[in-house]
Image 1 (cartoon, rainbow, N blue to C red):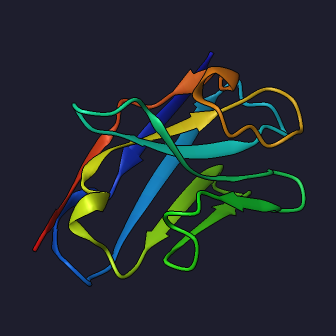
Image 2 (image 1 turned 60 degrees about the vertical axis):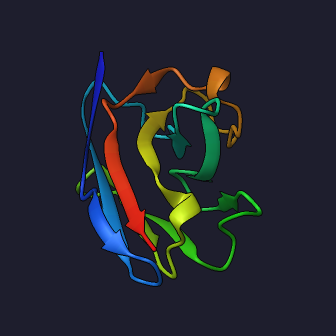
Amino acid sequence: QVQLVESGGGLVQAGGPLRLSCAASGRTFSDSPRGWFRQTPEKEREFVAAISWVGGRTVYANSVKGRFTISRDVAKNTVYLQMNSLKPEDTAVYYCAAARGISIPTRAGEYDYWGQGTQVTVSS
């Protein structure tokens, strides 16, 4: 079983930065891609970014491209989401996810493990 624990959420003013972390433990697959999703009460879970564990190839949603950066620390089994130039519409619960396989999924249904989520609130 894989456990994912997010941290780093909070309240930030529009235009500011915030960095989320997601630490994995348990039986993680050495090539497991990781992703970040977000969800609000009004919307379905939305893809934000993903990264391959081998090679660090990244994929971003158009809405965050150029503002968010996903990265990973293989030794710490941790993935990060650096969020810059935050906007009120970025407000959501952010979830970390891990998938089996080596492709980089962008749909929530393709991920097998999920964290509990961390709230990000951007004030205007």
